[in-house]
Image (cartoon, rainbow, N blue to C red; front, side, top):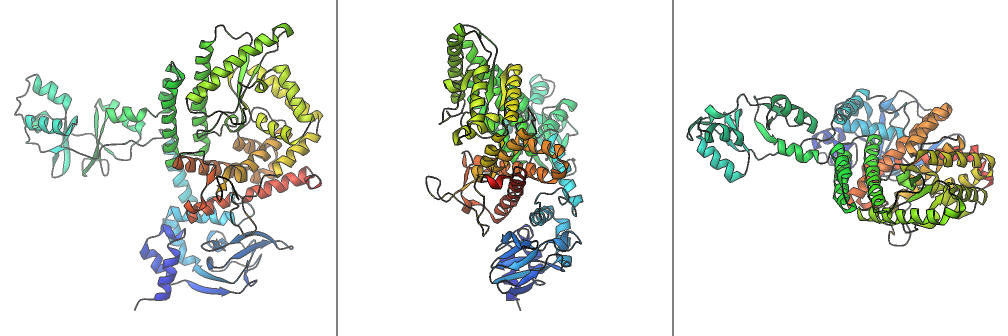
Length: 639
């Protein structure tokens, strides 16, 4: 007779990770050993420093508060489908937090020893458990926890990713294989190839590939008269056939074709002629795929004669980005490559714009990328944020020089619009006279921002301090950077205003751990990942890197990694912030590619439970980081 209770447990578990990664048979087996526990409101599940239980828990109904310290500060509130008490599965340490029913709750107790084998053989289960365990620690992405128990699984995954980094893109092959037998005559082969519009036919025997006949073979062997048109495939085929596994990368395919001087590869189940063919790969397939190779894209951009020619290339860049996201290429590398490609696009637009000018630039100048583009974090198509700075000139030439660079900037901004960058709604672009200034004028503006710290000044300084040189003279930028740091040092009160701005970003979640969504407007009921999650981290990284007077690092994750070097006592937190920021940026990028927008506003009902858990796991670093800033700058007195 069917156990209806265990079946109900199974029906619940299969909808939530990590159980959703198991097959139904495994879930049913596990469910038969699950204990069902009822907890009244405020009753203890486990206490801080208590020895580990022999089970971890899944919340079926209700909510459980995780508390820490003598003041019982609530660290987290877990609800339906969440895991708590993973410590017995991951380590042999006592519990680091108290778990108390926040409301009347029903828990499923999963025996750790019973579940552990599933985690050891299923890397998706293992990786999820590690992240979930880390999210219930003080530091959700702590280096000391990542891969601690399941190191061999995580390392395999990392090794696999590293292998992909050698050539990035998997090859796309044709699964429509045209075959013939060794006795098929050449004229029949030619008819089949013409009808199917293919350049090669596979010769098989007992369903195994033994050779291949290409259109080149027909030209060289049949048309020349070397063999009669009725010659059998066995006499004109290339044999033995060169076979490879289907999981090839583009570079591997190129190398294989060059090595054997062939234009077609036969892909089999195990990569040998001893298994059935699963696809055919042609040199044309490889060349099409190479169209999205970064080096090829850069060459195409630099060959462009008009700005409009760059727009379709940027579409290829987006396809490349999608491929990197799909293959789980590390965000650090993805960001660097896409930023480099975007910079080359902008540089080419500037070069084309200079050709439209009647004369060469009167003095040296620099084109600056601002905001997210300046931080090398603008992966999706968004609006423009840029500025232009040029060398000082004599007063009698000031107007003429400014007009020249305003005209140039107008051409550049128009060109950027043509390739897909929308105009900035706030007009923070170099074609705006307020953002096209000489070195001295920029210094005066920066001094005004730092010494007149109103809300607008602080906001503008935030945008401007995230700049990077896209084109032009680096000496000008270095001079301006030096001035900024000297002026901030001379006006330390400015830090307090930066602190105030960094701490005013709204919290990602409410008291009951629910996402805080937009309350009105066109994006009502959506989650603003930019303002509520990315900006608090970016603002804090900017503040702390300015505090240490570090130049030439504008990327948020790289700033945190540098801070980890500068402050060893806070290394763990800063590295967690870097990790969280990259995770959030990847999440926003995936959403933007999915919905063909900026990815800023996310419809929560479109996310899976796993996606919501991973998103929330990144939020805890924000709270810890803001607490560090509050203490360091005594910010409680200014908020």
